[in-house]
Image (cartoon, rainbow, N blue to C red; front, side, top):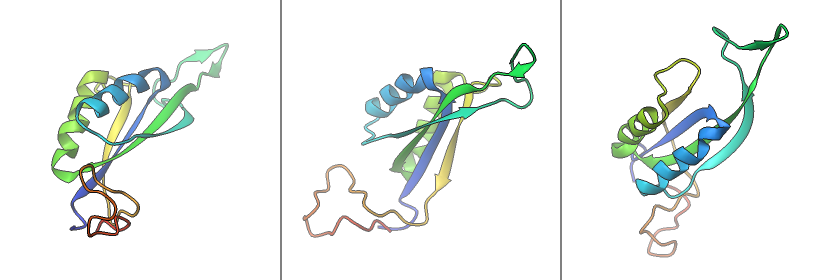
Length: 119
């Protein structure tokens, strides 16, 4: 496969919105989402409590998708979470140079391909 066959979506969102993204991923046929917890702060309009900035819980969701579907899925996530409003989060579409260990749905490991190098 060519190196431009896949893209990675990275959604950086409030942890309460993660189930919505997972539902979208399942609906569009995504295989898996990796979730990493973190903290984040909007540096432009960060809310405060007694003068101290409030850092909300954030989650980073990583998803490898077919390149031709990446932007459509990203737009769907953007629209569902209203990401055009400040402080809601963001979704990134990242070009991948190489993918190892990813076996696309419908392609079984052992069907003539090692399944360990998608480039």
